[in-house]
Length: 368
Ligand SMILES: *Cc1c(COP(=O)(O)O)cnc(C)c1O
Image (cartoon, rainbow, N blue to C red; front, side, top):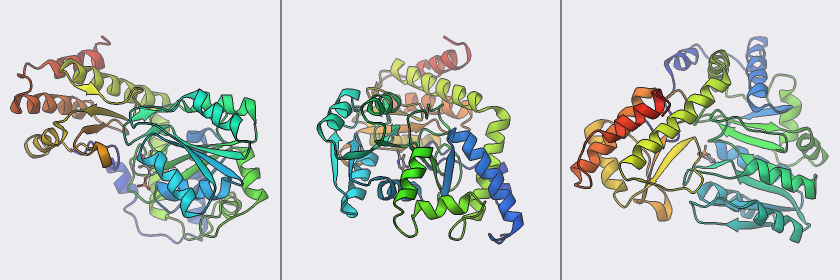
């Protein structure tokens, strides 16, 4: 059972949709498929423009940094993915400043407002919606609204790789929202997507940059239902299939189920004495702080066939993360909390009495 916060399992109907013969990307047949996927994506992002790139999510992060910073970037670092925005700036010798916090701590709206007020050269802000390193939710929408009051020309770029397909995002004040294929969208890795505002498109077109990741070139091509370079045809077919299914079931139903599953998992684990790591937990995953992280994960994998993620860098061996993104079955999430309670029993931490499963079921199905 794969319950890591990316990659997530690919549903059978998506695997089947991607199993057909490879078609040429410069054909009317593929353009029709591209158009359908593109329209579904525009709806998913709820933004006026979108581009798909053949790359992992980091490629889209790089494309946004290079195409949307014309003067200086402000990057928000509360974890490995926020740190990455700064590393991209450094790699391209783009001027940047960073607000750094511990991995359980979201950036405050005031800290961003102060940074912007104190440095007029900042023209773009890069932030995660959910910082997956510690599973925290940043107050992105509030930050964007406040920053736009100060200067509406500051571009807000939100990494929504573990937020798009997880919860409804208010994109009113966002200029670019990034996502990738292998998290909430339940596809194999290799496709990145960026939703764009009209202001972001104008900024990109005013000063086209780069070659492979030149977003001006891509926007122009993708508006005609093709791509600048060879399209990731198989993944675009798969993306169309998954978005059609999510739309049919209702986006709001997916968001509501994910939120409830996250809540039920967190209540269940709290009830058996586990500590939620982030101060503002995101809905994409549950992150638990425990010195027993490695031992718990080992028992889960070897004895109960549950794969969950650990932590990186200074949090290696100190946290574990359970995925809630995608079409996770209720019985999978319920089995995961059960297995954790059994692991705690085996480690002599807490005697098993079925509390985790009970609280999970009560929260998930009884609305308690
Ligand atoms: C997974 C992830 C990424 C991108 O990682 P890739 O491995 O390049 O796809 C970026 N940001 C967040 C928040 C993520 O969870």
